Length: 233
Ligand SMILES: *Cc1c(COP(=O)(O)O)cnc(C)c1O
Image (cartoon, rainbow, N blue to C red):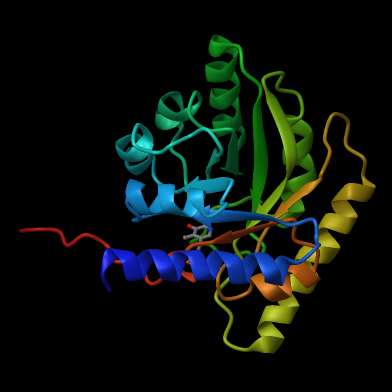
C-alpha cells in the first residue's frame, strides 16, 4: 500500500469503529505499537483521542514526534519497575499495574513530580501462568493495597483475555469478566472507583462492548497487520 492508501484505510477503519460504538459510552483507544509517529498523528487527525503504547523504549523514541495537543497517552504493556521513571511525566494512565512493587514505584515517581497517576489494575482473567496480571482471587486485596498510595488513583480494571478458539470460549471469558467487575464493585473498596473497564481488541471488541467494556483497545483493526522490524544478524 502507498502511504495515501494506508491513510485512507486508517481513516475508514476509525469511521467504521466509531459508528459501531454508536452512542455507547465507550472510549476508543488506538494501540499504536510498531506504528510510525506519522501514522499515529494521522489517526489523531481522524479523531483518535487516546493512544496506547506497550514498550517504554518505543514510546520514548516516538514521543517527541507525536502531536500531543488532542490526545492522551496510555501505557498498556508489561512495565518493568526500573523503567517507570521514564514514563510518568509522559502518560496519563498506566493500564498494566499488576503488582504492589510497581504501584509503589509509580507512587514514588509521581510524588516527586507532583502528579497523581490514573491506573488500571490488570487482571489475569484466564489464570494463565505465562501472562501478567493479578489473579482474580487476589484482586480485592491488591486493590485495597494500591488504594493506599496517595499519588495513584485507581480508575478500573484492564483485561487481556486468553486467545479463544471459538465463540463459546470467548463468551466464557466475557461472562467471567462481567461477573468479576460486578463482584468487585459491590465491595465498595475505599478510595476506588471501578469506572473504566478496558477490554476488547480487534477480534472481540464488538462482543466486549455488549459485556460492559468502557474502553476498547484496537491496533490491527485500525492500522492493519503489524510488521515488526527485522532484526539484523
Ligand atoms: C496490541 C495490543 C492491543 C491491540 O491488539 P489488536 O489485536 O491489534 O487490536 C490491545 N491491548 C494491548 C495490551 C496490546 O498490546
